[in-house]
Image (cartoon, rainbow, N blue to C red; front, side, top):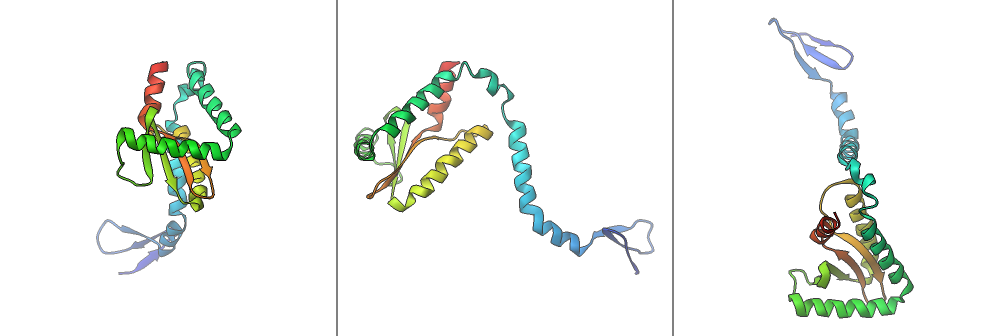
Length: 176
């Protein structure tokens, strides 16, 4: 059975009327090199296409939550870290009193649809990355994800304050 090599496809010739195309081994190597990158590019393209085009036209409707979050962020930057640390410790214990111990010892449900994640001081960088990632998920997809409000690093611990995903959806429904 002779092998005929063309540009990108090798064909095995046999005595039958149809020929079976077999990809060249170099194509498999090339695919292995670029497959992850191509998959990420496809995911990014899909997320951009699925983005809500009406989101920009609803600026006047969604102005209240934006102003509320900007105000909260300004207040938290003005407050000293020690005051925020004390407030987060009190919120953590209040959440324990209201809702009991959560399944994770590091994450506690708080009143008003908030969640507080507490970890080692070295995890503050990881919490910042997670906050940025949650913002990207909210911006570029329709996946209900928590919204990060604050990341705090102290010598004793690091904190990530978030709003639960349903609270964000409920707030958007009330405003509309």
